Image (cartoon, rainbow, N blue to C red; front, side, top):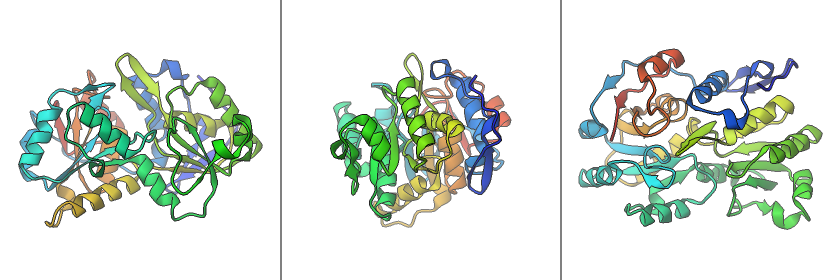
Length: 329
């Protein structure tokens, strides 16, 4: 385990996270259990939870008659890796037959929503760019309201952020960009290794600057194991350096509010927040954030992060309860 003996804190939502108490395994040791442990350690800086008497149903389709709109997680609900999850195609057909407005709300920030829409269409899904909100969209929307900064887009950022200078074009080298950037945006972590992490931590220790985390996920289930995501790497960096962090994406409220607004634009009927179903596979992002936003939280257990786990036990351990639990769509 990585340890730090300094008495340092990080504050979010008015709550303090005691960094010296964090125990974070190396990235190649991540699994479902360790992912939950990290999320639980981060609870002071996540939205608050509340007790809900969860209803267990055979499939998500059973509740579609009582919802006004649908928000779907991307990874873990629509696809795992490069394969669609079972029943997702017929599920989309059903919500369209019911004329339910829907959006896909993903913490994937490496690519634009248009790129994600093109990928889904290649897989045979009738999805348009207007049907997708990525945490990148949420970050860019907030950056337009801020004075322009020279932001270094860390790692998986194939398209420069809107309204901000591209540090890779401004700086002479990667190391110069690390030194000269006024802020950093952590979008994705494909290919991010210990060497890159050490360089970022050194740059932040030398000159603390804001880090915008577009994907706050700790890890994501892959075909073979779990990947370390930006939330994991930034939490590790916080143990080494004092710097401001702005979190975007689920479970934080800005993503859910953008999804609600776009859903409402898709229909003339007033939407009741408590009747908008957020369908996801992660307790600490999809379910916690949806419940805090006043939505109907729906946990699917057979596809993604919860696959093969004792869901009832984990809900009790974490005190995160979805409104609806379903094994499949």
